[in-house]
Length: 291
Length: 291
Image 1 (spheres, one colour):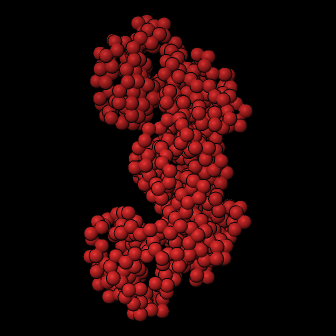
Image 2 (cartoon, rainbow over the protein chains, first blue to last red):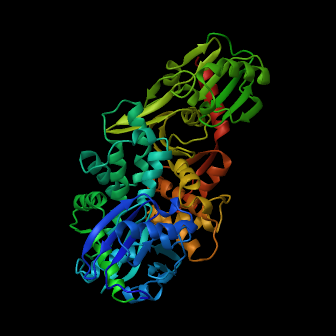
């Protein structure tokens, strides 16, 4: 640490579309939080010093820890990817300091036998959840989102992981496909979501998509097709978490966590649900103690 | 028939994005063909009379048979859907005559046990191929495209069918996804297409998508990712044609037919390949004889 964490710090989960920032005291307690849509795709690299100054005006004159896509080639500075297996000490070794008192955290990568994967931001939540005792020592963690991460974590390290584009596929179908006008409803757990999950647990979910349009054209019974498609895609996604002889935890925002937990329940598997924001703050704390 | 087919006719396969038109003599021989991009999404309903006049200027002062999306709610007039099982006589019963000497053919629908599906245009190819002796009496026909049709045909009728959005999903990924800049290569049969098919034959193809981006970011070996994704999606699609104890035929344009046939070959199944344009003309002939 170049400055000092003695007065606390600001932790920022700076993503592609949004960012969340938290003021944390020296003991690790969260004092203030804010969220807005100033994700990296809306910012030019040269504007980050102003953004940092603005965050300090709003949350206090404190050192900052930045995680997520802010460290990607679309963000401020490109921080490295730390290869798996990766723990807190490994992450700290890859920190960049674009300004004094501003730590920019690296991401994590996985490459083995022709399989490649990367994450930025979720690693802090994974390591934080493990350090805070939210996870068993050997666990498969599902972190749902635009790009859902499935990480195998053991003894406080990320051993390997794989990303599915579940959230992005859902968005593509909602915004750009021939089904778009059928997919404008609100997604929530219910009969139609369950029907999608049930289909995907026994068949190829892609086979069910066009039938949504045909059902409408042929005046079939009404349905919340957005919830149905969400069920199809999430039901397909969770199949990789079944029958692995590993406990499974779902960690993220409450809405997506509930959908994934419901899909697992329909498949007969109980999962633990973990608050992603709490895990993130635990992860930042873990890093700050080592910088 | 309101006019007469004695001098031959013009057959038009009028799709969403493109149209193909053929001048055919009274004996069914194709004399002239043309193709352009004046699909129904580029035309307002009121412009069709001018389009018909223009087709006659280019191909001759003949009666016309129109099939495909021109008969949909996005086309000229909405022709009905004929429910499965559907044969040539059933189609003829649903023909509209928007002008004298212009026959607009219906589509075909399937609805059973909560499953719904529709087709417009492919039905002529299916019935034509059967009538021309291109198909065995009991066969699963794959008609690849933006919306790939899988039709079970017996004794010259379409018994049931299901549509997969394989081509549309590929286009969504190429044009709108985070992978778009990796998917600008030409798709052709080869090592990368084969690798995609092999993956999809044993695992969920959606699981492999994000790895394309990670492979690039982590400087993995170069690959034609467009061919790989095409292999993933087509490999997933053909799984429904495997182990059905039915002969399978692939019918469509030469490029897609080759890709599907290759995917089937990698799965250990031999398929017949049928020229979609010939099947279409045989289908139009079949209808013209009954109007």
